[in-house]
Length: 188
Length: 188
Image (tube, rainbow over all chains, first blue to last red; front, side, top):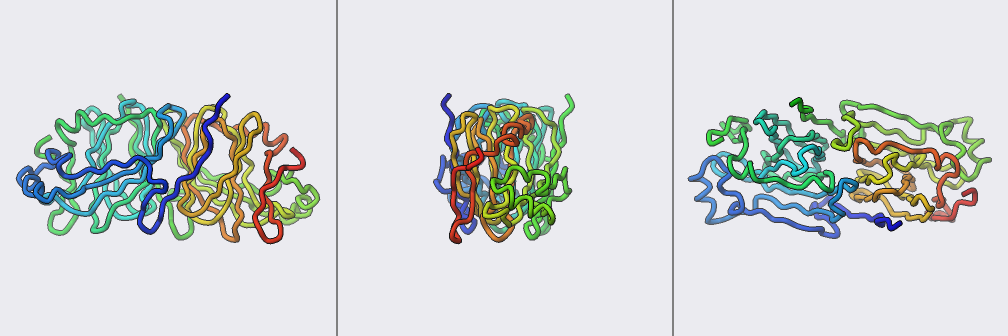
């Protein structure tokens, strides 16, 4: 029988780079500008088109036997009063969990079920956030430094951005009077 | 449909405790003394019966949809010239991977296939060790501080200690002339 060989990757704990780099994806505002609730603010920020987040995935076979894992960095910033965030997704294989271990920074994990029940939990250095099977998940950087986390999920889980690209998510995370505030999304 | 609710656990990055504590297992030398190759040294150390390692697991359903995860701490020390180590195990569902993210300390991950092919890779702060499906795995603390790591595996993977309890593993990790040395196990 042929076995996959064991191997190491490394997280540089100073600058949060993955070595070897893995498969990288960089998302700019223009990749997701229609997901922010304040469309006027989004249009204005498009001129600068900031990098919102990037993630680097260690390549393993995309099967139920394997575990995909990645390092994600969400930059600090806001579109209007809404904090920088990831696109958010369900898993294609809906019945699969995910784990986020936060390595640096502060944020919120915004989740919802296919029926639109919402849950929001905090992320901070050392938090292990458990996203149970079926929940869509989006991460939001509410701090003034990059939010960095290590994520693990089943190799065959896949990403389903479809429904969230259409209507975004039920809850938004905004700054209100200098505080982090979780509100209903007026466009949902 | 009933969904499992999202939740956080926390790793205290100062003393490496899990909060809430989770399901803890503590292994003393007397739980595994016959696994060390130098049985005379093991017998001597049994008087003191040191804690070799402990791990705390976050409780989630033990199904293929979920991801079990734990914080493990291996104490520094040696039995004769062989470093403190975990018992080592295969997964009961053999075709399932595991990931170890090292948070502190230095060590070696000793692995082998069911046919006895061996692989040993280093562990250090920031290393992400990928244990592919089918490989038995044991961790060894080769440093003078606790070796601490975060581990993730499929909820249904299970632990099969049987064959390793019988014959230990093909490779041993010992101190030789002040250096870490990987050798064939004379008792294997």
